[in-house]
Length: 238
Length: 238
Image (cartoon, rainbow over all chains, first blue to last red; front, side, top):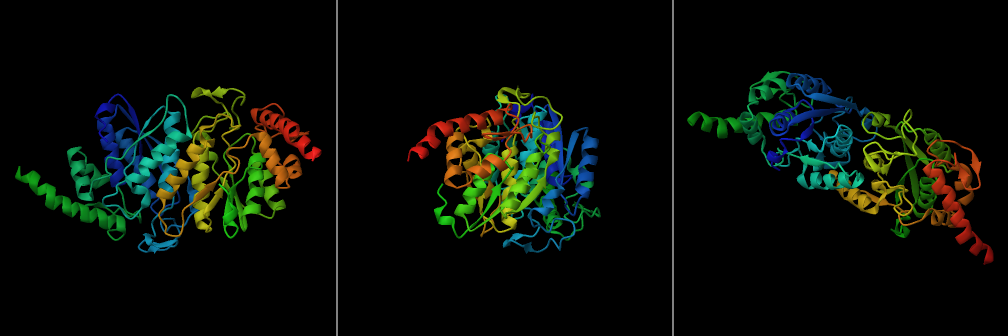
């Protein structure tokens, strides 16, 4: 969805300090008059993402609301939680789903983000989900986001409110996401400041920081390689 | 939705110790092979409802999962939270909505209940929402529940799971709900054990326990009066 008509509006960005949400932050800063952010600590192994998100928001002068929903690890299975086995496995409840999947996480995030957005008078929510290069997470698909938006707007019937969920990365491959960062003028920032790694390791690589071993790092490294081949050469040629 | 075909299945009932959810507990105990319950502490004035819910589940030999989501009061406005003004007002964000409305509460409850249900292998969720004698809460309407069920099932695509939300009270007036309790053989239990009062006051009345002054008590007292006039006399005549 184009956000060209939203330059007089405010947006709330769900942020985790990773590549996707940080690219969304820059996208929102370009397309909205004012931007706020929200991040969640849910007992994840990579709890450092909350620290990184705060650092990024401070650098970008964006207000950040932090929420602790670490009770979630008592409710659902996921190897993304601290104290659980390797994320490079399949999910305990279904072998066709990655072990890192946290059931209902994105709906929970969207519900709480909508709640906070309503309180601070924001209608536009920006989320860095993507169904192109996604990790097999059902709640990153557009069909889910559209349904969630409808449900959220049926849950509350305040006259002045109601949310619009923007997902600028939905149709982008990781390579194209790097290209978008380049176009938004934030590629260096993405490569040096963001942390997508499931293991929360901040080791530097050409494609950014991470352990280089978890599915999130693999996706990022592969995407950066593809970006370099497909887009960077073209830019240099022009 | 009839539950006649679910006698071999398990159900998870959202319970608050009030009339609605306790009637649902009895309904589920009649219609499902096994029943579990879940209750939420969210910073409500009537925190006693969590204690009452636990007492009721113990008496009915039903496992209860308790979740503390009291961070919610930092996210949304509602006069249902401890330390807020009178519930007998209109909502800070919209004068056409009661002050007691907690934005997104039911979607949050359903999301967390679905998460827990998936973990313990339950597909059927029972919730005591009602759009007939409702209090002006958008998230008690059937159109919301149907949309929420769709969204919840798009959020997770485990092969074996997926939730079905049952709302046996959806079309019932409070009077008919008392009638249902009578038919389920739990009317005395409802009148003596449950606490629906927004102020958490356990003063005894003919229609049950409460302050007799808040909107929830008014609705209950009025409903019981109507039940007596419409149904109790008929029963006596037979």
